[in-house]
Image 1: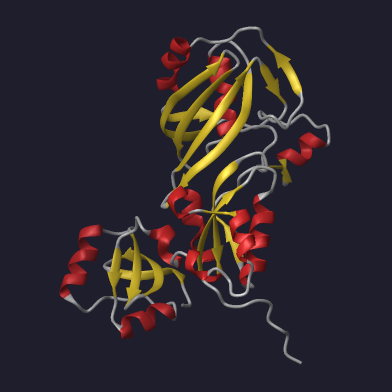
Image 2: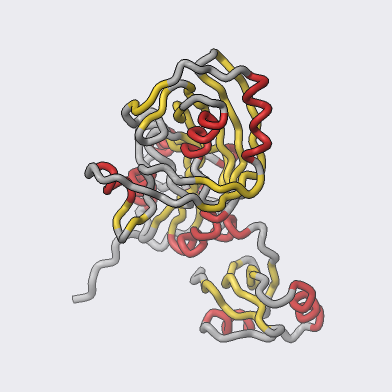
Length: 308
């Protein structure tokens, strides 16, 4: 007897405005159930205590998750001065205190030192692996976890408000692998105090922003009969910043079969030559995204083929 297929082949991106108090994995499970989708994933974890943009990939969009995760992200966050916590956010227990409260001018004076390529030590409570184990699992088990500093990029960092002496509100645009919890911790240390993130909201992930988002409450209120397909964005949305090239039906068929393609049209060959080896291309045919391809010696080599 043939194995029964679970869910339907539904493809696209849904931009969720995740509320505080629910995990990213739980949100993905809810979206998958509401759409009765075969496959689902997300474009970058948000901690339960964080809110904001969580792009959820359905079906063939899951093949483009890596590009969403690599995209720049924008966060608004609040640092609570005077308390260091085990998790570098409000969820942890207090491990150090300080009476020092930095003034607005002092805060503004140190921000430029956190912009550009910087070295950052990830939070002890993170999903990074140490000898095959998640760092947060080791830390919760009472082990001392030492994570090495690594290079990350912060595109911009600005002070938005100082509502009271204990708190300061910021906005940052960051590259892949940047931990906002670590940024808040290090800002406090630079200012001669200690601190943790007391509030965190993500407002953008690459092309996905609040203008596209739907709240989890609204999504669940719509139910799943029929699913809210009008909120789905195209599979290729996560690849919008990658150059596109339209192929013929024959060229698209070869690419779908995993074969390299040397475009026949002179204008296409000139376009590929201009971009150069190693450049990624969105290969399309008609209105459909065929594959993400890479230029190699004047031809297109498929990297991820999409079955749409």
